Image (tube, rainbow, N blue to C red):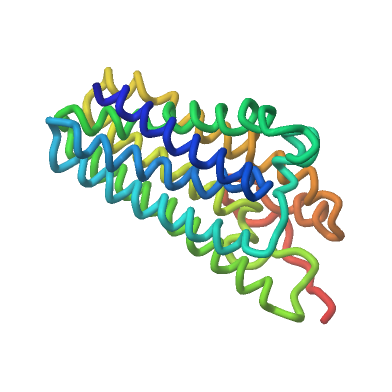
Amino acid sequence: MVLLVALATVTVVMTAAALVARAVGRVAVVDVAWGLGFVAVAAVVALVADDGAARRWLLLGLVGAWGLRLAWHIRRRAVGHGEDPRYEALLGGPLREVGFAVAVRRVFLVQGVALWFISLPVQVGAGLAVRWWPVVVAGSLVWLVGLVFEAVGDAQLAAYKRDRDRAPVMDRGLWGWTRHPNYFGDACVWWGIWLVGGLASGWLPGLLTVAAPLAMTYFLLYATGARLLERSMMTRAGYPEYAARTSMFFPRPPRSPRASHAR
Protein backbone atom coordinates (compact mmCIF):
# COMPACT_ATOMS: atom_id res chain seq x y z
CA MET A 1 0.00 0.00 0.00
CA VAL A 2 2.69 2.48 1.02
CA LEU A 3 4.81 1.69 -2.04
CA LEU A 4 1.88 2.22 -4.41
CA VAL A 5 0.85 5.47 -2.75
CA ALA A 6 4.44 6.70 -3.07
CA LEU A 7 4.50 5.73 -6.75
CA ALA A 8 1.26 7.63 -7.37
CA THR A 9 2.71 10.68 -5.59
CA VAL A 10 5.85 10.61 -7.75
CA THR A 11 3.70 10.31 -10.89
CA VAL A 12 1.73 13.43 -9.97
CA VAL A 13 4.86 15.44 -9.14
CA MET A 14 6.74 14.51 -12.31
CA THR A 15 3.69 15.02 -14.52
CA ALA A 16 3.26 18.51 -13.10
CA ALA A 17 6.97 19.23 -13.57
CA ALA A 18 6.87 18.05 -17.19
CA LEU A 19 3.90 20.30 -17.95
CA VAL A 20 5.67 23.28 -16.39
CA ALA A 21 8.82 22.47 -18.38
CA ARG A 22 6.79 22.39 -21.59
CA ALA A 23 5.23 25.76 -20.76
CA VAL A 24 8.50 27.54 -19.92
CA GLY A 25 10.71 25.67 -22.39
CA ARG A 26 13.23 24.53 -19.78
CA VAL A 27 13.75 20.93 -18.69
CA ALA A 28 15.84 22.11 -15.73
CA VAL A 29 12.64 22.73 -13.74
CA VAL A 30 12.91 19.02 -12.90
CA ASP A 31 15.70 19.93 -10.47
CA VAL A 32 13.21 21.87 -8.34
CA ALA A 33 10.66 19.04 -8.64
CA TRP A 34 13.36 16.56 -7.54
CA GLY A 35 13.63 17.92 -4.01
CA LEU A 36 9.91 18.65 -3.71
CA GLY A 37 9.08 15.14 -4.93
CA PHE A 38 10.95 13.53 -2.05
CA VAL A 39 9.19 15.82 0.41
CA ALA A 40 5.82 14.90 -1.09
CA VAL A 41 6.59 11.17 -0.83
CA ALA A 42 7.75 11.49 2.79
CA ALA A 43 4.65 13.50 3.71
CA VAL A 44 2.17 11.15 2.02
CA VAL A 45 3.66 7.94 3.43
CA ALA A 46 3.83 9.51 6.90
CA LEU A 47 0.09 10.12 6.66
CA VAL A 48 -0.96 6.73 5.27
CA ALA A 49 1.41 4.39 7.16
CA ASP A 50 0.13 2.79 10.36
CA ASP A 51 3.34 1.78 12.16
CA GLY A 52 6.56 3.42 13.39
CA ALA A 53 4.88 6.74 14.13
CA ALA A 54 7.87 8.48 15.76
CA ARG A 55 10.29 7.54 13.02
CA ARG A 56 8.05 8.34 10.07
CA TRP A 57 7.69 11.91 11.34
CA LEU A 58 11.45 12.05 11.91
CA LEU A 59 11.96 10.90 8.32
CA LEU A 60 9.56 13.58 7.11
CA GLY A 61 11.57 16.16 9.04
CA LEU A 62 14.89 14.97 7.60
CA VAL A 63 13.62 14.73 4.03
CA GLY A 64 11.64 17.95 4.36
CA ALA A 65 14.57 20.02 5.59
CA TRP A 66 16.80 18.68 2.82
CA GLY A 67 14.27 18.79 -0.02
CA LEU A 68 12.80 22.22 0.69
CA ARG A 69 16.26 23.79 1.09
CA LEU A 70 17.41 22.18 -2.16
CA ALA A 71 14.34 23.25 -4.12
CA TRP A 72 14.57 26.82 -2.80
CA HIS A 73 18.28 27.03 -3.57
CA ILE A 74 17.93 25.68 -7.11
CA ARG A 75 14.92 27.89 -7.86
CA ARG A 76 16.74 31.00 -6.67
CA ARG A 77 19.89 30.09 -8.61
CA ALA A 78 17.95 29.44 -11.83
CA VAL A 79 16.20 32.82 -11.97
CA GLY A 80 17.31 34.68 -15.10
CA HIS A 81 19.17 31.72 -16.60
CA GLY A 82 18.46 29.50 -19.58
CA GLU A 83 18.55 25.74 -19.90
CA ASP A 84 21.07 23.77 -17.86
CA PRO A 85 23.82 22.49 -20.22
CA ARG A 86 23.60 19.06 -18.59
CA TYR A 87 20.05 18.60 -19.84
CA GLU A 88 20.83 19.85 -23.32
CA ALA A 89 23.57 17.18 -23.39
CA LEU A 90 21.14 14.50 -22.20
CA LEU A 91 18.49 15.53 -24.71
CA GLY A 92 20.87 16.02 -27.59
CA GLY A 93 19.87 19.66 -28.01
CA PRO A 94 17.43 22.34 -26.77
CA LEU A 95 13.91 21.25 -25.78
CA ARG A 96 12.31 23.18 -28.66
CA GLU A 97 14.40 21.21 -31.15
CA VAL A 98 14.29 17.67 -29.75
CA GLY A 99 10.64 17.75 -28.73
CA PHE A 100 8.64 17.30 -25.54
CA ALA A 101 8.30 13.52 -25.88
CA VAL A 102 12.09 13.11 -25.81
CA ALA A 103 12.29 15.18 -22.62
CA VAL A 104 9.58 13.07 -20.97
CA ARG A 105 11.32 9.84 -21.88
CA ARG A 106 14.90 10.82 -21.13
CA VAL A 107 14.44 13.12 -18.13
CA PHE A 108 11.06 13.09 -16.39
CA LEU A 109 10.39 9.35 -16.62
CA VAL A 110 13.94 8.45 -15.62
CA GLN A 111 14.01 10.88 -12.72
CA GLY A 112 10.55 9.82 -11.59
CA VAL A 113 11.58 6.17 -11.40
CA ALA A 114 14.80 7.18 -9.65
CA LEU A 115 12.89 9.33 -7.15
CA TRP A 116 10.55 6.49 -6.23
CA PHE A 117 13.40 3.99 -5.97
CA ILE A 118 15.73 6.23 -3.94
CA SER A 119 12.92 7.07 -1.53
CA LEU A 120 12.43 3.38 -0.65
CA PRO A 121 14.13 3.74 2.77
CA VAL A 122 11.62 6.48 3.59
CA GLN A 123 8.71 4.32 2.45
CA VAL A 124 9.95 1.25 4.33
CA GLY A 125 10.83 3.23 7.45
CA ALA A 126 7.36 4.76 7.56
CA GLY A 127 5.69 1.35 7.59
CA LEU A 128 7.90 -0.65 9.97
CA ALA A 129 8.81 -0.50 13.63
CA VAL A 130 12.32 0.54 14.68
CA ARG A 131 14.59 -2.34 15.65
CA TRP A 132 17.78 -0.40 16.46
CA TRP A 133 17.41 3.15 17.74
CA PRO A 134 21.21 3.71 17.90
CA VAL A 135 21.25 3.28 14.11
CA VAL A 136 18.56 5.98 13.87
CA VAL A 137 20.83 8.31 15.86
CA ALA A 138 23.87 7.44 13.73
CA GLY A 139 21.90 8.00 10.54
CA SER A 140 20.67 11.37 11.77
CA LEU A 141 24.28 12.43 12.39
CA VAL A 142 25.36 11.31 8.89
CA TRP A 143 22.38 13.24 7.48
CA LEU A 144 23.48 16.33 9.43
CA VAL A 145 27.02 16.11 8.06
CA GLY A 146 25.58 15.95 4.56
CA LEU A 147 23.24 18.90 5.04
CA VAL A 148 26.09 21.01 6.45
CA PHE A 149 28.27 20.19 3.43
CA GLU A 150 25.47 21.16 1.07
CA ALA A 151 24.45 24.37 2.82
CA VAL A 152 27.98 25.60 3.60
CA GLY A 153 29.24 24.68 0.14
CA ASP A 154 26.37 26.56 -1.53
CA ALA A 155 26.91 29.60 0.71
CA GLN A 156 30.64 29.65 -0.02
CA LEU A 157 30.01 29.42 -3.75
CA ALA A 158 27.49 32.26 -3.60
CA ALA A 159 30.01 34.43 -1.71
CA TYR A 160 32.67 33.62 -4.31
CA LYS A 161 30.36 34.70 -7.14
CA ARG A 162 29.71 38.04 -5.39
CA ASP A 163 33.44 38.74 -5.06
CA ARG A 164 34.50 41.05 -7.90
CA ASP A 165 38.16 40.17 -7.32
CA ARG A 166 37.58 36.44 -7.29
CA ALA A 167 40.08 33.94 -8.66
CA PRO A 168 39.22 32.16 -11.94
CA VAL A 169 38.22 29.00 -10.07
CA MET A 170 36.45 28.56 -6.74
CA ASP A 171 38.88 26.68 -4.48
CA ARG A 172 38.08 28.18 -1.08
CA GLY A 173 36.68 26.51 2.02
CA LEU A 174 35.07 23.16 1.37
CA TRP A 175 35.77 23.63 -2.34
CA GLY A 176 39.47 23.28 -1.58
CA TRP A 177 38.82 19.77 -0.24
CA THR A 178 36.31 18.51 -2.82
CA ARG A 179 35.26 19.88 -6.20
CA HIS A 180 31.63 19.04 -5.41
CA PRO A 181 30.82 19.52 -1.69
CA ASN A 182 27.11 19.80 -2.51
CA TYR A 183 27.07 16.44 -4.29
CA PHE A 184 29.07 14.82 -1.49
CA GLY A 185 26.62 16.31 1.00
CA ASP A 186 23.68 14.96 -1.00
CA ALA A 187 25.16 11.47 -0.84
CA CYS A 188 25.67 11.71 2.93
CA VAL A 189 22.08 12.89 3.39
CA TRP A 190 20.72 9.81 1.63
CA TRP A 191 23.08 7.35 3.29
CA GLY A 192 21.89 8.85 6.58
CA ILE A 193 18.25 8.47 5.57
CA TRP A 194 18.94 4.85 4.59
CA LEU A 195 20.38 4.22 8.06
CA VAL A 196 17.35 5.85 9.71
CA GLY A 197 14.65 4.30 7.52
CA GLY A 198 16.22 1.12 6.19
CA LEU A 199 18.91 -0.44 8.34
CA ALA A 200 17.36 0.68 11.63
CA SER A 201 14.39 -1.55 10.75
CA GLY A 202 16.61 -4.66 10.74
CA TRP A 203 19.07 -6.46 8.52
CA LEU A 204 16.55 -7.55 5.90
CA PRO A 205 14.96 -4.11 5.32
CA GLY A 206 18.47 -2.66 5.29
CA LEU A 207 19.67 -5.08 2.62
CA LEU A 208 16.51 -4.64 0.54
CA THR A 209 16.88 -0.84 0.48
CA VAL A 210 20.67 -0.32 0.35
CA ALA A 211 20.47 -0.02 -3.44
CA ALA A 212 18.65 3.30 -2.91
CA PRO A 213 21.59 5.31 -1.54
CA LEU A 214 23.88 3.47 -3.95
CA ALA A 215 21.68 4.68 -6.81
CA MET A 216 21.67 8.24 -5.48
CA THR A 217 25.46 8.19 -5.23
CA TYR A 218 25.65 6.91 -8.80
CA PHE A 219 23.39 9.71 -10.03
CA LEU A 220 25.44 12.31 -8.18
CA LEU A 221 28.73 11.00 -9.54
CA TYR A 222 27.87 9.91 -13.06
CA ALA A 223 24.35 10.19 -14.46
CA THR A 224 23.35 13.84 -13.93
CA GLY A 225 25.99 14.99 -11.46
CA ALA A 226 29.69 15.54 -11.17
CA ARG A 227 31.03 13.74 -14.26
CA LEU A 228 28.53 15.40 -16.57
CA LEU A 229 29.13 18.85 -15.08
CA GLU A 230 32.88 18.49 -15.34
CA ARG A 231 32.74 18.06 -19.12
CA SER A 232 31.96 21.76 -19.40
CA MET A 233 33.96 22.86 -16.35
CA MET A 234 37.19 21.43 -17.76
CA THR A 235 37.06 24.03 -20.54
CA ARG A 236 37.35 26.88 -18.03
CA ALA A 237 40.72 28.52 -17.44
CA GLY A 238 42.39 27.13 -14.34
CA TYR A 239 39.92 24.30 -13.78
CA PRO A 240 42.14 21.42 -15.00
CA GLU A 241 44.85 22.58 -12.56
CA TYR A 242 42.27 22.81 -9.78
CA ALA A 243 41.02 19.32 -10.64
CA ALA A 244 44.56 17.95 -10.53
CA ARG A 245 45.03 18.99 -6.90
CA THR A 246 41.49 18.61 -5.53
CA SER A 247 39.42 15.47 -4.94
CA MET A 248 36.37 15.24 -7.18
CA PHE A 249 34.01 13.83 -4.54
CA PHE A 250 35.31 12.56 -1.21
CA PRO A 251 36.84 15.42 0.82
CA ARG A 252 40.60 15.36 1.47
CA PRO A 253 43.36 17.97 1.74
CA PRO A 254 44.53 19.29 -1.64
CA ARG A 255 47.53 17.51 -3.15
CA SER A 256 49.61 20.69 -3.08
CA PRO A 257 49.31 24.12 -1.42
CA ARG A 258 46.87 26.38 -3.18
CA ALA A 259 48.66 28.69 -5.62
CA SER A 260 48.24 32.38 -4.93
CA HIS A 261 46.13 34.24 -7.47
CA ALA A 262 46.99 37.63 -8.92
CA ARG A 263 44.50 40.29 -8.03
